Image 1: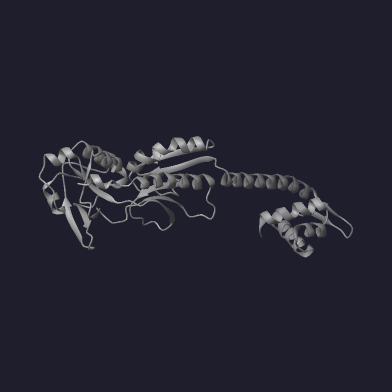
Image 2: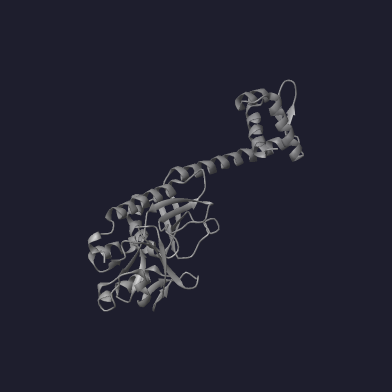
Length: 311
């Protein structure tokens, strides 16, 4: 028995004081309404209605049940309206997780304008380079980089990205010349910690041939900002997402090496994604924030890497 439906039927019968009138209101038949009332009474172990050929009245148990049932149905209606309002309006707390580098460079700077545009939204922002379980940690949106493997989530691609090998002019000036990827064996390469043994940078040339070059150096880290800062300081050569060094390459504080190659350290899908849980009902706050981030990264893509400063 559907207890909630039976409760609704009982309240309507009590209000109409008639099985047939209640049936018409509910778009059902008197026989169906009678069966639901009987099932409700059987479930409660009490008679709720006094039935006669001329009228229908509530028993003492029926009067008590009606009072509680009306309150419960009102609370249910209020709860449904509240959820509908949350879904339709841009309000409430939005829990966002982001990888550190993209978070520091683009997500954090973009928050102020978004929150000023939507004053009813609050953002709870977490940043780490660890995988997170959106359901377990109650996260609405996760900003990820690179190849995706979680098929239980929806992925919205915010940016098409490539990785670039780069170094400062000062580093290149005081070290041996670099002509091919294999020359990196003689250089201080700043690497991202992958917990998978030796780091290899993979080069894909214009003919579709790949070359894996083992690289190492004086700094390994799981922090993108740390590698970026060390590269700018002239410590060595790094492999960075293009969006993280785009302005530095434009200004000439970093130079791009091997522009004729597509480069990666794992795979060739280096895009930026907004991940969220599968649902038929995406809340307004989630939809608005993803649309907003799409605009932020579209503006980034419009800048591009300046060809004139490639090494």
